[in-house]
Image 1 (tube, one colour):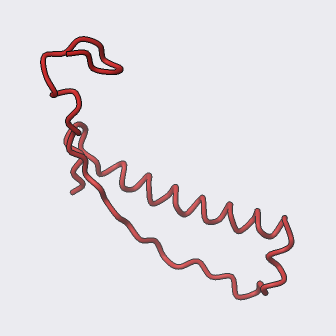
Image 2: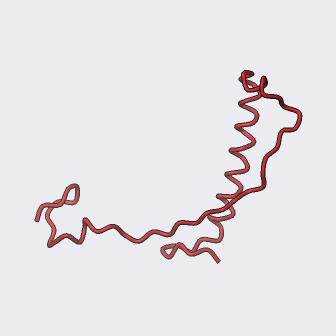
Length: 76
């Protein structure tokens, strides 16, 4: 049997999905009490807020990645 993109195969094995673990993590809420709705039109403020969000998300991902077991994926 011809399997795309792997080439010649002996069955449907290559078309079966591999199991995957999904981990959901929630961070602390981000609040900007000094900002008002009109500040959403200021590119500098939006960029600063986006950078803060990105940094918090990266911190959470780093923490989850450090607890991950290679090839198993389980977090402890």
